[in-house]
Length: 535
Image (tube, rainbow, N blue to C red):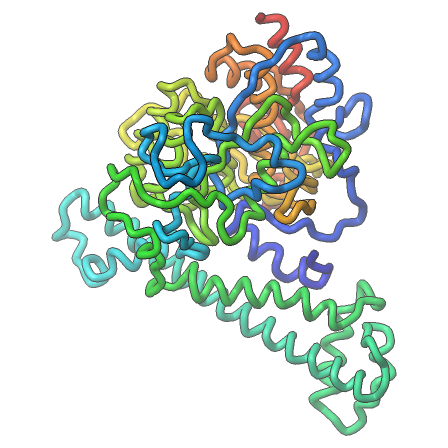
Protein backbone atom coordinates (compact mmCIF):
# COMPACT_ATOMS: atom_id res chain seq x y z
CA UNK A 1 0.00 0.00 0.00
CA UNK A 2 1.17 3.52 -0.72
CA UNK A 3 1.40 5.85 2.25
CA UNK A 4 -0.01 9.36 2.43
CA UNK A 5 3.21 10.92 1.15
CA UNK A 6 3.06 8.90 -2.05
CA UNK A 7 -0.67 9.39 -2.41
CA UNK A 8 -0.36 13.15 -2.56
CA UNK A 9 2.36 13.06 -5.17
CA UNK A 10 1.69 10.18 -7.56
CA UNK A 11 -2.00 9.29 -7.33
CA UNK A 12 -2.98 11.77 -10.01
CA UNK A 13 -0.19 10.62 -12.29
CA UNK A 14 -1.18 6.98 -12.09
CA UNK A 15 -4.89 7.50 -12.66
CA UNK A 16 -4.62 8.47 -16.30
CA UNK A 17 -2.84 5.35 -17.47
CA UNK A 18 -4.35 2.39 -15.68
CA UNK A 19 -7.75 0.89 -15.14
CA UNK A 20 -6.94 -0.29 -11.65
CA UNK A 21 -5.63 1.80 -8.80
CA UNK A 22 -4.06 0.91 -5.46
CA UNK A 23 -6.33 1.49 -2.49
CA UNK A 24 -4.80 4.55 -0.93
CA UNK A 25 -4.94 5.34 2.76
CA UNK A 26 -8.23 6.96 3.72
CA UNK A 27 -9.74 8.64 6.73
CA UNK A 28 -11.95 5.59 7.17
CA UNK A 29 -12.52 2.36 5.31
CA UNK A 30 -15.66 0.43 4.40
CA UNK A 31 -16.49 -3.18 5.23
CA UNK A 32 -14.78 -5.62 2.89
CA UNK A 33 -18.15 -6.72 1.55
CA UNK A 34 -19.59 -3.24 1.09
CA UNK A 35 -20.21 -3.79 -2.63
CA UNK A 36 -22.66 -6.58 -1.71
CA UNK A 37 -24.61 -4.46 0.76
CA UNK A 38 -27.87 -2.54 0.55
CA UNK A 39 -28.11 1.20 1.16
CA UNK A 40 -31.50 1.18 2.88
CA UNK A 41 -30.83 -1.63 5.34
CA UNK A 42 -27.03 -1.85 5.52
CA UNK A 43 -25.91 1.76 4.97
CA UNK A 44 -23.72 1.10 1.92
CA UNK A 45 -24.78 1.62 -1.70
CA UNK A 46 -23.69 -1.77 -2.97
CA UNK A 47 -25.63 -4.07 -5.30
CA UNK A 48 -27.89 -5.53 -2.54
CA UNK A 49 -26.88 -9.10 -3.35
CA UNK A 50 -27.80 -10.55 0.07
CA UNK A 51 -31.39 -9.40 -0.31
CA UNK A 52 -31.55 -10.46 -3.97
CA UNK A 53 -30.61 -14.06 -3.20
CA UNK A 54 -33.44 -14.25 -0.69
CA UNK A 55 -35.86 -13.63 -3.56
CA UNK A 56 -34.13 -16.24 -5.72
CA UNK A 57 -33.79 -19.12 -3.27
CA UNK A 58 -36.78 -21.03 -4.64
CA UNK A 59 -35.74 -20.70 -8.30
CA UNK A 60 -33.60 -23.04 -10.36
CA UNK A 61 -30.53 -21.63 -12.08
CA UNK A 62 -28.39 -22.56 -15.05
CA UNK A 63 -24.62 -22.15 -15.35
CA UNK A 64 -23.54 -18.95 -17.09
CA UNK A 65 -20.11 -18.50 -18.67
CA UNK A 66 -18.42 -15.14 -18.20
CA UNK A 67 -15.31 -14.50 -20.25
CA UNK A 68 -12.73 -12.32 -18.51
CA UNK A 69 -10.56 -10.69 -21.16
CA UNK A 70 -7.69 -9.41 -19.09
CA UNK A 71 -4.09 -9.88 -17.94
CA UNK A 72 -4.65 -13.51 -16.91
CA UNK A 73 -6.25 -15.24 -13.94
CA UNK A 74 -4.78 -17.42 -11.20
CA UNK A 75 -6.89 -20.49 -11.96
CA UNK A 76 -5.52 -22.29 -8.89
CA UNK A 77 -6.70 -19.63 -6.44
CA UNK A 78 -8.52 -21.18 -3.48
CA UNK A 79 -11.61 -19.06 -4.11
CA UNK A 80 -11.67 -19.42 -7.91
CA UNK A 81 -10.49 -22.91 -8.84
CA UNK A 82 -13.99 -24.37 -8.54
CA UNK A 83 -15.53 -21.71 -10.79
CA UNK A 84 -13.00 -21.68 -13.65
CA UNK A 85 -14.45 -22.71 -17.00
CA UNK A 86 -13.35 -26.08 -18.35
CA UNK A 87 -13.52 -26.91 -22.04
CA UNK A 88 -15.03 -30.39 -21.76
CA UNK A 89 -14.42 -31.10 -25.46
CA UNK A 90 -10.66 -30.77 -25.09
CA UNK A 91 -8.38 -33.47 -23.65
CA UNK A 92 -5.79 -31.76 -21.44
CA UNK A 93 -2.17 -31.54 -22.53
CA UNK A 94 -2.29 -34.05 -25.39
CA UNK A 95 -1.08 -31.52 -27.96
CA UNK A 96 -4.16 -32.07 -30.12
CA UNK A 97 -6.98 -29.69 -31.01
CA UNK A 98 -9.63 -32.18 -29.92
CA UNK A 99 -12.63 -29.88 -30.42
CA UNK A 100 -11.33 -28.53 -33.75
CA UNK A 101 -11.76 -24.90 -32.72
CA UNK A 102 -8.24 -24.05 -33.85
CA UNK A 103 -6.74 -23.76 -30.35
CA UNK A 104 -4.70 -26.65 -28.99
CA UNK A 105 -5.31 -27.66 -25.37
CA UNK A 106 -7.43 -24.59 -24.59
CA UNK A 107 -8.73 -26.11 -21.36
CA UNK A 108 -9.56 -22.88 -19.50
CA UNK A 109 -9.36 -20.32 -22.29
CA UNK A 110 -6.56 -18.83 -24.38
CA UNK A 111 -3.59 -16.47 -24.25
CA UNK A 112 -3.30 -14.22 -27.31
CA UNK A 113 -0.10 -12.53 -26.11
CA UNK A 114 2.02 -15.62 -25.69
CA UNK A 115 4.36 -17.56 -27.96
CA UNK A 116 4.13 -21.16 -29.11
CA UNK A 117 7.11 -21.96 -26.90
CA UNK A 118 5.18 -20.91 -23.76
CA UNK A 119 6.76 -17.46 -23.55
CA UNK A 120 4.77 -14.32 -22.69
CA UNK A 121 4.51 -10.65 -23.42
CA UNK A 122 4.58 -8.89 -20.07
CA UNK A 123 5.19 -5.22 -20.91
CA UNK A 124 4.13 -3.49 -24.10
CA UNK A 125 4.06 0.08 -25.35
CA UNK A 126 1.03 2.35 -25.23
CA UNK A 127 -0.97 2.58 -28.45
CA UNK A 128 0.04 6.20 -29.01
CA UNK A 129 3.70 5.10 -28.77
CA UNK A 130 3.16 2.37 -31.34
CA UNK A 131 1.41 4.84 -33.66
CA UNK A 132 4.31 7.28 -33.46
CA UNK A 133 6.80 4.48 -34.11
CA UNK A 134 4.86 3.12 -37.07
CA UNK A 135 4.08 6.42 -38.80
CA UNK A 136 7.11 8.61 -38.04
CA UNK A 137 8.90 7.89 -41.31
CA UNK A 138 5.85 8.73 -43.38
CA UNK A 139 4.42 11.69 -41.49
CA UNK A 140 7.13 13.39 -39.45
CA UNK A 141 8.09 15.80 -42.23
CA UNK A 142 5.01 15.42 -44.40
CA UNK A 143 3.06 18.28 -45.96
CA UNK A 144 -0.57 17.59 -45.04
CA UNK A 145 -1.73 19.44 -48.17
CA UNK A 146 -0.07 16.78 -50.30
CA UNK A 147 -1.69 13.85 -48.50
CA UNK A 148 -4.77 11.89 -49.48
CA UNK A 149 -7.93 12.28 -47.41
CA UNK A 150 -7.24 9.00 -45.60
CA UNK A 151 -3.61 9.88 -44.94
CA UNK A 152 -4.56 13.34 -43.67
CA UNK A 153 -6.71 11.67 -41.05
CA UNK A 154 -3.80 9.43 -40.05
CA UNK A 155 -1.47 12.44 -40.08
CA UNK A 156 -3.71 14.25 -37.58
CA UNK A 157 -3.78 11.18 -35.32
CA UNK A 158 0.00 10.91 -35.60
CA UNK A 159 0.50 14.56 -34.67
CA UNK A 160 -1.78 14.26 -31.62
CA UNK A 161 -0.08 11.04 -30.52
CA UNK A 162 3.42 12.48 -30.94
CA UNK A 163 2.53 15.60 -28.96
CA UNK A 164 1.04 13.55 -26.13
CA UNK A 165 3.96 11.12 -26.16
CA UNK A 166 6.49 13.93 -25.83
CA UNK A 167 4.53 15.43 -22.95
CA UNK A 168 4.21 12.10 -21.16
CA UNK A 169 7.90 11.31 -21.56
CA UNK A 170 8.90 14.72 -20.23
CA UNK A 171 6.54 14.31 -17.28
CA UNK A 172 7.83 10.79 -16.53
CA UNK A 173 11.46 11.91 -16.72
CA UNK A 174 10.81 14.78 -14.31
CA UNK A 175 8.95 12.56 -11.88
CA UNK A 176 11.60 9.85 -12.04
CA UNK A 177 14.26 12.44 -11.23
CA UNK A 178 12.17 13.83 -8.36
CA UNK A 179 11.54 10.44 -6.76
CA UNK A 180 15.14 9.35 -7.28
CA UNK A 181 16.23 12.46 -5.36
CA UNK A 182 13.76 11.71 -2.56
CA UNK A 183 15.04 8.13 -2.45
CA UNK A 184 18.61 9.39 -2.10
CA UNK A 185 17.62 11.69 0.79
CA UNK A 186 15.81 8.88 2.58
CA UNK A 187 18.81 6.61 2.15
CA UNK A 188 21.14 9.29 3.53
CA UNK A 189 19.01 9.85 6.65
CA UNK A 190 18.50 6.11 7.26
CA UNK A 191 22.23 5.38 7.02
CA UNK A 192 23.09 8.28 9.33
CA UNK A 193 20.52 7.17 11.90
CA UNK A 194 21.68 3.58 11.84
CA UNK A 195 25.32 4.59 12.22
CA UNK A 196 24.35 6.66 15.27
CA UNK A 197 22.52 3.73 16.85
CA UNK A 198 18.89 4.71 16.28
CA UNK A 199 17.90 1.34 14.86
CA UNK A 200 14.73 1.71 12.76
CA UNK A 201 14.75 5.38 11.82
CA UNK A 202 11.33 7.04 11.94
CA UNK A 203 9.97 10.49 11.27
CA UNK A 204 9.95 11.02 15.01
CA UNK A 205 13.35 9.76 16.16
CA UNK A 206 15.37 11.14 13.23
CA UNK A 207 15.41 14.47 15.12
CA UNK A 208 18.01 12.76 17.35
CA UNK A 209 20.46 12.45 14.45
CA UNK A 210 23.55 14.60 14.90
CA UNK A 211 23.94 16.40 11.57
CA UNK A 212 26.18 19.23 12.77
CA UNK A 213 28.39 20.52 9.97
CA UNK A 214 26.87 18.18 7.37
CA UNK A 215 24.84 20.48 5.12
CA UNK A 216 23.76 17.62 2.84
CA UNK A 217 22.41 15.61 5.77
CA UNK A 218 20.68 18.66 7.26
CA UNK A 219 18.91 19.31 3.96
CA UNK A 220 17.92 15.64 3.70
CA UNK A 221 16.46 15.62 7.22
CA UNK A 222 14.40 18.73 6.45
CA UNK A 223 12.94 17.09 3.34
CA UNK A 224 12.14 13.87 5.17
CA UNK A 225 10.43 15.86 7.94
CA UNK A 226 7.95 17.14 5.35
CA UNK A 227 7.41 13.63 4.03
CA UNK A 228 6.62 12.21 7.48
CA UNK A 229 4.69 15.18 8.85
CA UNK A 230 1.36 13.32 8.71
CA UNK A 231 2.79 10.11 10.16
CA UNK A 232 5.85 10.67 12.38
CA UNK A 233 5.83 7.03 13.48
CA UNK A 234 6.44 5.84 9.92
CA UNK A 235 9.68 3.93 9.42
CA UNK A 236 11.80 5.51 6.73
CA UNK A 237 12.85 2.12 5.41
CA UNK A 238 9.18 1.27 4.80
CA UNK A 239 8.60 4.57 3.02
CA UNK A 240 11.61 3.89 0.85
CA UNK A 241 10.32 0.44 0.00
CA UNK A 242 6.98 1.93 -1.00
CA UNK A 243 8.75 4.60 -3.03
CA UNK A 244 10.36 1.81 -5.03
CA UNK A 245 6.94 1.18 -6.58
CA UNK A 246 6.86 4.73 -7.94
CA UNK A 247 10.43 4.46 -9.26
CA UNK A 248 9.57 1.17 -10.96
CA UNK A 249 6.45 2.71 -12.43
CA UNK A 250 8.23 5.63 -14.06
CA UNK A 251 11.14 3.45 -15.17
CA UNK A 252 8.69 1.06 -16.82
CA UNK A 253 6.89 3.97 -18.44
CA UNK A 254 10.10 5.26 -20.00
CA UNK A 255 11.53 1.86 -20.90
CA UNK A 256 8.35 0.25 -22.22
CA UNK A 257 5.11 2.27 -22.35
CA UNK A 258 6.62 5.43 -23.85
CA UNK A 259 9.54 3.91 -25.73
CA UNK A 260 9.11 3.94 -29.52
CA UNK A 261 12.01 1.51 -29.90
CA UNK A 262 10.35 -1.16 -27.74
CA UNK A 263 8.30 -3.80 -29.57
CA UNK A 264 7.89 -7.23 -27.94
CA UNK A 265 5.48 -8.58 -30.59
CA UNK A 266 8.03 -11.02 -32.00
CA UNK A 267 7.38 -13.14 -28.90
CA UNK A 268 3.92 -13.99 -30.26
CA UNK A 269 5.17 -14.90 -33.71
CA UNK A 270 2.03 -13.89 -35.60
CA UNK A 271 1.67 -11.84 -38.75
CA UNK A 272 0.67 -8.70 -36.89
CA UNK A 273 -0.37 -6.86 -40.04
CA UNK A 274 -2.93 -9.56 -40.82
CA UNK A 275 -6.05 -8.67 -38.82
CA UNK A 276 -7.89 -11.76 -40.08
CA UNK A 277 -5.34 -14.12 -38.51
CA UNK A 278 -7.04 -16.02 -35.70
CA UNK A 279 -4.76 -18.82 -34.53
CA UNK A 280 -1.72 -17.78 -32.51
CA UNK A 281 -0.71 -17.62 -28.84
CA UNK A 282 -0.70 -20.39 -26.24
CA UNK A 283 -2.91 -21.97 -23.59
CA UNK A 284 -1.22 -20.48 -20.49
CA UNK A 285 -4.01 -18.24 -19.18
CA UNK A 286 -2.20 -17.16 -16.02
CA UNK A 287 0.71 -15.23 -17.54
CA UNK A 288 3.51 -13.40 -15.71
CA UNK A 289 1.24 -11.08 -13.68
CA UNK A 290 -2.38 -12.12 -13.18
CA UNK A 291 -3.17 -9.63 -10.40
CA UNK A 292 -5.63 -7.52 -12.37
CA UNK A 293 -7.51 -10.38 -14.00
CA UNK A 294 -7.66 -12.42 -10.79
CA UNK A 295 -9.17 -9.49 -8.91
CA UNK A 296 -11.74 -8.97 -11.66
CA UNK A 297 -12.67 -12.66 -11.73
CA UNK A 298 -13.19 -12.73 -7.96
CA UNK A 299 -15.65 -9.84 -8.03
CA UNK A 300 -17.76 -11.70 -10.56
CA UNK A 301 -17.59 -15.23 -9.28
CA UNK A 302 -15.39 -16.04 -6.28
CA UNK A 303 -17.04 -19.11 -4.80
CA UNK A 304 -19.95 -18.11 -2.62
CA UNK A 305 -20.57 -19.56 0.80
CA UNK A 306 -17.34 -21.55 1.11
CA UNK A 307 -16.29 -19.70 4.27
CA UNK A 308 -12.99 -18.40 2.88
CA UNK A 309 -11.83 -15.14 1.41
CA UNK A 310 -14.79 -13.32 -0.10
CA UNK A 311 -17.90 -13.99 -2.15
CA UNK A 312 -18.31 -13.05 -5.78
CA UNK A 313 -21.61 -11.53 -6.83
CA UNK A 314 -22.75 -14.42 -9.03
CA UNK A 315 -23.20 -18.09 -8.28
CA UNK A 316 -23.62 -20.72 -11.01
CA UNK A 317 -20.90 -19.01 -13.05
CA UNK A 318 -17.82 -20.29 -14.82
CA UNK A 319 -14.96 -17.92 -15.65
CA UNK A 320 -13.47 -18.34 -19.13
CA UNK A 321 -9.99 -16.83 -19.05
CA UNK A 322 -8.71 -14.97 -22.09
CA UNK A 323 -5.38 -13.19 -21.79
CA UNK A 324 -4.70 -10.26 -24.11
CA UNK A 325 -3.91 -7.31 -21.79
CA UNK A 326 -0.21 -6.67 -21.03
CA UNK A 327 1.42 -4.08 -18.80
CA UNK A 328 0.77 -1.41 -21.41
CA UNK A 329 -1.97 -1.06 -24.00
CA UNK A 330 -3.79 -4.06 -25.41
CA UNK A 331 -3.68 -4.49 -29.19
CA UNK A 332 -6.84 -4.33 -31.29
CA UNK A 333 -6.11 -7.56 -33.14
CA UNK A 334 -5.87 -9.43 -29.84
CA UNK A 335 -9.00 -7.79 -28.45
CA UNK A 336 -10.97 -8.73 -31.58
CA UNK A 337 -9.78 -12.32 -31.45
CA UNK A 338 -10.48 -12.54 -27.72
CA UNK A 339 -14.07 -11.41 -28.26
CA UNK A 340 -14.51 -13.92 -31.09
CA UNK A 341 -12.99 -16.74 -29.05
CA UNK A 342 -15.37 -16.02 -26.16
CA UNK A 343 -18.40 -15.88 -28.47
CA UNK A 344 -17.43 -19.09 -30.29
CA UNK A 345 -16.78 -21.07 -27.13
CA UNK A 346 -19.97 -20.45 -25.20
CA UNK A 347 -19.52 -17.21 -23.25
CA UNK A 348 -22.77 -15.50 -22.31
CA UNK A 349 -21.06 -12.37 -20.98
CA UNK A 350 -17.69 -10.77 -21.75
CA UNK A 351 -16.03 -8.51 -19.18
CA UNK A 352 -13.53 -5.99 -20.57
CA UNK A 353 -11.72 -4.02 -17.87
CA UNK A 354 -9.26 -2.26 -20.15
CA UNK A 355 -9.09 0.71 -22.48
CA UNK A 356 -6.86 3.23 -24.24
CA UNK A 357 -6.91 6.63 -25.88
CA UNK A 358 -5.99 5.56 -29.43
CA UNK A 359 -7.10 2.79 -31.78
CA UNK A 360 -4.96 1.01 -34.35
CA UNK A 361 -7.46 -1.31 -36.03
CA UNK A 362 -10.87 -0.27 -34.79
CA UNK A 363 -12.67 -1.97 -37.66
CA UNK A 364 -11.40 -5.38 -36.51
CA UNK A 365 -12.78 -4.74 -33.02
CA UNK A 366 -16.06 -3.37 -34.42
CA UNK A 367 -16.57 -6.51 -36.48
CA UNK A 368 -15.83 -8.70 -33.46
CA UNK A 369 -18.37 -6.78 -31.35
CA UNK A 370 -20.98 -7.25 -34.06
CA UNK A 371 -20.09 -10.95 -34.20
CA UNK A 372 -20.54 -11.37 -30.45
CA UNK A 373 -23.82 -9.46 -30.51
CA UNK A 374 -25.13 -11.73 -33.26
CA UNK A 375 -24.35 -14.69 -31.00
CA UNK A 376 -26.29 -13.14 -28.12
CA UNK A 377 -23.34 -12.15 -25.96
CA UNK A 378 -23.50 -9.25 -23.48
CA UNK A 379 -20.33 -7.11 -23.49
CA UNK A 380 -19.49 -5.08 -20.38
CA UNK A 381 -16.70 -2.50 -20.56
CA UNK A 382 -14.97 -0.31 -17.98
CA UNK A 383 -15.37 3.39 -18.73
CA UNK A 384 -11.81 4.30 -17.71
CA UNK A 385 -10.01 6.17 -14.94
CA UNK A 386 -9.06 9.50 -16.47
CA UNK A 387 -11.74 11.58 -14.69
CA UNK A 388 -12.93 12.56 -18.16
CA UNK A 389 -16.23 13.12 -19.92
CA UNK A 390 -16.03 10.29 -22.47
CA UNK A 391 -18.73 11.92 -24.54
CA UNK A 392 -15.92 14.31 -25.44
CA UNK A 393 -12.75 12.24 -24.96
CA UNK A 394 -13.11 8.90 -26.73
CA UNK A 395 -11.77 5.78 -25.04
CA UNK A 396 -11.28 2.56 -26.99
CA UNK A 397 -12.80 0.05 -27.43
CA UNK A 398 -16.19 1.66 -27.77
CA UNK A 399 -19.72 0.61 -28.68
CA UNK A 400 -19.80 3.14 -31.54
CA UNK A 401 -18.76 1.73 -34.91
CA UNK A 402 -16.57 3.71 -37.30
CA UNK A 403 -18.99 3.03 -40.14
CA UNK A 404 -22.06 4.08 -38.19
CA UNK A 405 -24.31 2.34 -35.71
CA UNK A 406 -23.47 0.95 -32.30
CA UNK A 407 -23.40 -2.27 -30.30
CA UNK A 408 -26.79 -3.11 -28.84
CA UNK A 409 -25.50 -5.57 -26.26
CA UNK A 410 -22.71 -3.29 -24.97
CA UNK A 411 -22.68 -1.68 -21.51
CA UNK A 412 -20.27 1.05 -20.40
CA UNK A 413 -19.72 1.21 -16.63
CA UNK A 414 -18.43 3.99 -14.36
CA UNK A 415 -17.22 3.54 -10.77
CA UNK A 416 -19.13 4.25 -7.56
CA UNK A 417 -17.51 5.03 -4.25
CA UNK A 418 -18.77 3.57 -0.99
CA UNK A 419 -19.00 7.10 0.34
CA UNK A 420 -22.25 9.07 0.34
CA UNK A 421 -22.88 12.15 -1.78
CA UNK A 422 -21.16 14.39 -2.66
CA UNK A 423 -18.37 11.76 -2.86
CA UNK A 424 -20.61 9.08 -4.31
CA UNK A 425 -18.65 8.77 -7.57
CA UNK A 426 -15.09 7.48 -7.74
CA UNK A 427 -12.87 10.55 -8.07
CA UNK A 428 -10.99 8.87 -10.93
CA UNK A 429 -14.00 7.57 -12.86
CA UNK A 430 -14.84 8.60 -16.38
CA UNK A 431 -18.43 9.64 -17.00
CA UNK A 432 -20.68 10.68 -19.88
CA UNK A 433 -24.36 11.44 -20.30
CA UNK A 434 -24.41 9.67 -23.69
CA UNK A 435 -21.62 7.12 -23.42
CA UNK A 436 -21.66 5.70 -19.87
CA UNK A 437 -24.72 3.56 -19.12
CA UNK A 438 -24.51 2.91 -15.40
CA UNK A 439 -22.34 3.25 -12.32
CA UNK A 440 -21.33 0.28 -10.22
CA UNK A 441 -19.17 -0.27 -7.09
CA UNK A 442 -15.53 0.37 -7.96
CA UNK A 443 -13.79 1.91 -4.95
CA UNK A 444 -12.17 -0.12 -2.15
CA UNK A 445 -13.21 -3.47 -3.63
CA UNK A 446 -11.86 -6.48 -1.74
CA UNK A 447 -11.25 -9.45 -4.00
CA UNK A 448 -8.93 -12.26 -5.03
CA UNK A 449 -5.31 -11.80 -6.10
CA UNK A 450 -2.75 -14.46 -7.11
CA UNK A 451 -1.40 -16.97 -4.62
CA UNK A 452 -4.75 -17.46 -2.84
CA UNK A 453 -4.42 -13.96 -1.42
CA UNK A 454 -6.86 -11.03 -1.27
CA UNK A 455 -6.52 -7.28 -1.65
CA UNK A 456 -8.53 -4.09 -2.00
CA UNK A 457 -8.17 -2.29 -5.33
CA UNK A 458 -10.18 0.35 -7.09
CA UNK A 459 -10.96 1.50 -10.59
CA UNK A 460 -13.61 1.16 -13.24
CA UNK A 461 -11.89 -2.18 -13.74
CA UNK A 462 -13.66 -3.25 -10.55
CA UNK A 463 -16.96 -1.56 -11.45
CA UNK A 464 -17.35 -3.45 -14.72
CA UNK A 465 -17.14 -6.95 -13.18
CA UNK A 466 -19.55 -5.90 -10.42
CA UNK A 467 -22.06 -5.10 -13.18
CA UNK A 468 -21.10 -8.29 -15.02
CA UNK A 469 -21.80 -10.29 -11.85
CA UNK A 470 -25.27 -8.76 -11.58
CA UNK A 471 -25.94 -9.52 -15.25
CA UNK A 472 -24.75 -13.10 -14.75
CA UNK A 473 -27.21 -13.65 -11.90
CA UNK A 474 -30.10 -12.46 -14.07
CA UNK A 475 -28.99 -14.64 -16.99
CA UNK A 476 -28.59 -17.62 -14.69
CA UNK A 477 -31.95 -17.44 -12.90
CA UNK A 478 -33.91 -16.13 -15.87
CA UNK A 479 -32.53 -18.13 -18.82
CA UNK A 480 -35.23 -17.02 -21.27
CA UNK A 481 -33.90 -13.46 -21.28
CA UNK A 482 -31.58 -12.49 -24.13
CA UNK A 483 -28.49 -10.30 -23.77
CA UNK A 484 -30.54 -7.33 -24.93
CA UNK A 485 -33.21 -8.16 -22.35
CA UNK A 486 -30.66 -8.34 -19.55
CA UNK A 487 -29.11 -5.03 -20.57
CA UNK A 488 -32.53 -3.39 -20.47
CA UNK A 489 -33.32 -4.96 -17.09
CA UNK A 490 -30.09 -3.64 -15.55
CA UNK A 491 -30.77 -0.19 -16.97
CA UNK A 492 -34.47 0.04 -16.08
CA UNK A 493 -33.95 -1.34 -12.58
CA UNK A 494 -31.07 1.03 -11.83
CA UNK A 495 -31.49 3.12 -8.70
CA UNK A 496 -31.75 6.70 -9.85
CA UNK A 497 -30.17 9.37 -7.72
CA UNK A 498 -30.40 13.12 -8.20
CA UNK A 499 -28.11 13.97 -5.31
CA UNK A 500 -25.40 16.52 -5.90
CA UNK A 501 -21.98 14.95 -6.43
CA UNK A 502 -18.51 16.17 -7.23
CA UNK A 503 -17.57 15.80 -10.87
CA UNK A 504 -14.54 13.50 -11.14
CA UNK A 505 -11.36 15.46 -11.71
CA UNK A 506 -13.03 18.75 -10.84
CA UNK A 507 -14.07 20.83 -7.85
CA UNK A 508 -17.38 21.51 -9.55
CA UNK A 509 -20.54 19.65 -8.68
CA UNK A 510 -23.48 18.31 -10.63
CA UNK A 511 -26.33 15.92 -9.95
CA UNK A 512 -25.49 12.25 -10.18
CA UNK A 513 -28.15 11.59 -12.82
CA UNK A 514 -26.24 13.80 -15.29
CA UNK A 515 -23.15 11.60 -15.33
CA UNK A 516 -24.59 8.65 -17.25
CA UNK A 517 -27.27 7.77 -19.75
CA UNK A 518 -29.57 6.16 -17.18
CA UNK A 519 -28.58 8.35 -14.26
CA UNK A 520 -28.49 5.28 -12.06
CA UNK A 521 -26.43 2.69 -10.24
CA UNK A 522 -26.56 -1.07 -10.74
CA UNK A 523 -28.59 -2.98 -8.18
CA UNK A 524 -29.14 -6.73 -8.18
CA UNK A 525 -32.17 -6.66 -5.88
CA UNK A 526 -34.05 -4.24 -8.12
CA UNK A 527 -32.95 -6.16 -11.21
CA UNK A 528 -34.32 -9.40 -9.76
CA UNK A 529 -37.60 -7.71 -8.85
CA UNK A 530 -37.98 -6.43 -12.40
CA UNK A 531 -36.99 -9.78 -13.89
CA UNK A 532 -39.59 -11.54 -11.75
CA UNK A 533 -42.25 -9.17 -13.04
CA UNK A 534 -41.21 -9.67 -16.66
CA UNK A 535 -40.96 -13.44 -16.35
